[in-house]
Image 1: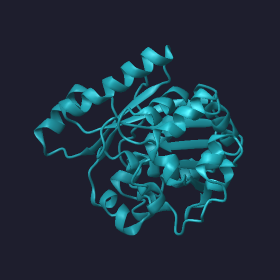
Image 2: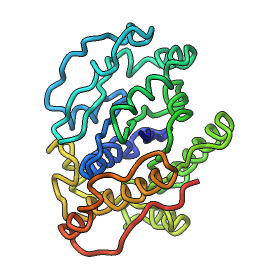
Image 3: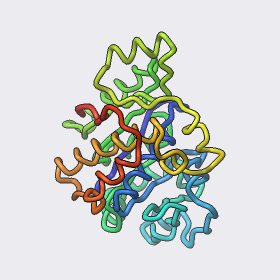
Image 4: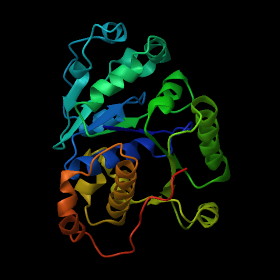
Length: 274
């Protein structure tokens, strides 16, 4: 029911890591969850999908409204989490999204997916190309991972400016500090300037995702990074329910039991979204 775009104009900021772990958290709470892998490298698919099933419909047929988007959806190795694995033409070609938007099919395509899933996490491509621009205008929520450095923070303002200019009253935007090393002076200064932003630390558990090909919550469920993703998702999901874009997940009744499995620590919630 809710589409969440994870986006930053710059690559290498932990966007795919954030998308994967939020999708895992959503599924772990009992939501029917879809991760739409639109990053050109396809890392989300590589980590979450054991084997790719060849799509039965190609991107051209889908673009012209005669294909079935479900043919591009495959189950992941995580229960309750599917991955939308587009063909290379769909992932890499901005013209695909431009055509969909011009024919007013993009909104209909998203509505079709929303009928099947409770939460949709979109791993957007970097840069403000046509694909990202179109997705930013239809997403219900936009999460922007930001490396704590002055130039990186400027990317967030680019996102806000574009969405406000082209969408009017924009969807809520949540900045999240990513790949944080508190030993670095620039990182510490950025955290002081924005104390209410969620913080994702740079940890070995996150680094092991690529070799273990699993979300952090499966690799190290009691780690600080897993706790951060868990609390961050709780804040995001609460916001979706408050906006009446989604219903509370079935797993909320078991939230206390799951939290007890992690080490005690100060709670972290998503900061106010603007």
